[in-house]
Length: 131
Image 1: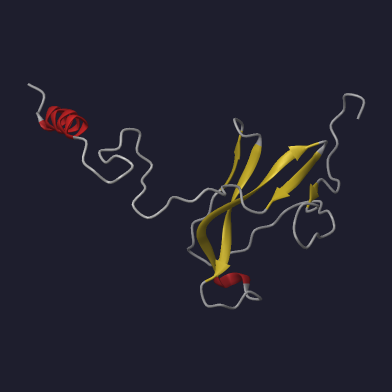
Image 2: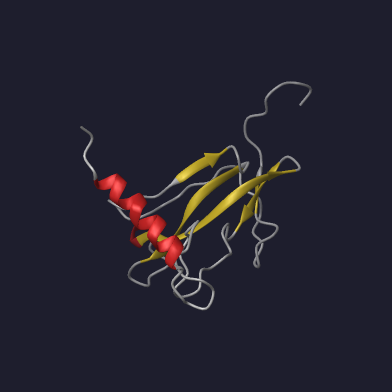
């Protein structure tokens, strides 16, 4: 306030969750010993990303069983609060789709011979050792 930092406060909100919870002063993440989780602020997104955790033994009351499941949740700074985003990435690839800038197959599944040849040449160049 008035150009001075504020330490502490109910800045983490869950107002957009399907079951809203009261705001929190801080966030703690409990997980299984040895599990590797990500908690990171990404400036380009203006968000804190957190691995979504599930119980590997189907015991959600036991946080020491929590491991990442591949999804991300997060907190986005909106109007002076860190607002919880339950699922950051909502898109899904269909079977056979790959995050590929230059797909070899067209939308009907046919091979594009020209692209295949270009990619083959490119890969052969990568295989050649530098002299």
